[in-house]
Length: 332
Image 1 (cartoon, one colour):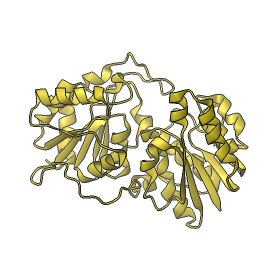
Image 2 (cartoon, rainbow, N blue to C red):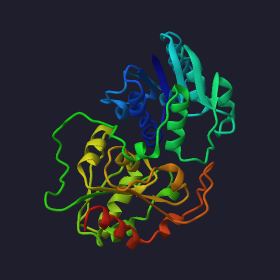
Image 3 (cartoon, one colour):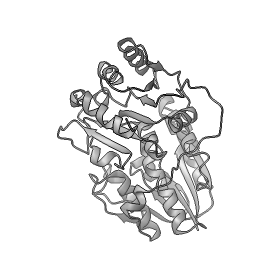
Image 4 (cartoon, helix red, strand yellow):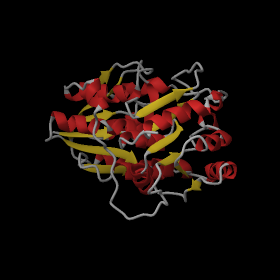
């Protein structure tokens, strides 16, 4: 049996979908799984033995260059592929639904129109699955795939998941401590309303006896990282990392603290302890709490269908509360 999974972007969303791989293989090791993804995020999927083949699409490049030619070239590639038994669109957007429809298959399965924000997407599927959009995203992804292939996954199985993101073994010096616990701080996210303030991250570093490393992904985040270091000079600001090096670094630390963003979700995928801070996005939906992966929410009312970018409530999360949870996780 050959299946195709379509989940194009972004880091956190792909991570939340990749958990399905191990459960598919637990159900039937003989199923061949191909994954369709935007080229920018290919490194997340590489080195996972459960994936047969990764197909990359240059959709972001087409959008950036406003090039219809690039887009059509990418889409035409799909029509030349061999037939799949099932194509599963986990993304639930119009663009992913179109791509899923263009991939030759017996069945194209996705969420029904009441389960996604872009309702038109459901019209491209031959089979549809109902799951409230406000439901936990990891539960939604697993339920869709389980419905598509005919198996069940329990909460206990999710809690006891195996790590599912891998990187090539490399010797990289991240200046981690051999004598203290190492903690990553993440100041950036897709929008400033999701970010915890620099001065509070600095204050947090003074409440925990550990070695702190701040990571960043663009120049704006770098400035915030350097601001944290100004407040707390003992903090290390990491150089810009490739996605692969980011995965390696996270796999080597004792704790990750950050907002609802890709690197924090990678720590969950690696079974690395984490604290995810939520302001304008729903913690109950956007991650899966475990004994080592905790969430702290601001308490504001959140609409899962749309981020309120004026909601800056994350800045009011108590620093001492984060420190207490962190110390429990690192055994202090």
